[in-house]
Image 1 (tube, rainbow, N blue to C red):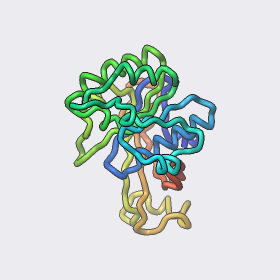
Image 2: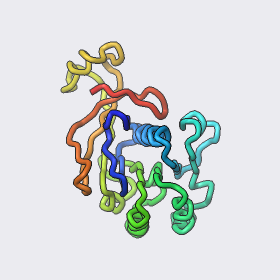
Image 3: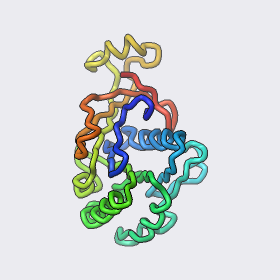
Length: 217
């Protein structure tokens, strides 16, 4: 994905990927982490909710550093977070991925906590990417997070049918890989406050593995 320039990422700042449950946010983030890892970057992939260790080995590429913030008690009762402990962890890496920030920063604490995190990322010249839950077309983690992002993307799923506007183009190029009724994913940029990586195009892809995708168009 990174090699095909599907997602334009600034060197420094906060990048968000939002979407409904099951749309493909985590696959996109794992694909980005995989690409950075192959490029020799020091990447930390933070999972905010409990996950079985046996499942981690299946979801993530070998050698990628993953950390379950719930297990480290970063998230406290009443949804308070230990910000200093979180920053101590982040200090060791240049690229940090949080999946999902909606679970780390629920709506009623998001506006308070996102400001110092945003300031920290820019002051230390790091790149932070995060997934954001969307339910019923509304941000689950609070709009306070989105307001402080530098770049925001949206990922969505749709059924491949003749009604789909790119149906003929995809069928002509990839007719052997996608059939009528299959679920494909779309990926588009919603805004770019950096004025450096704006891309108005919508891309479509298939999920090949928990961290690999195949671009259709």
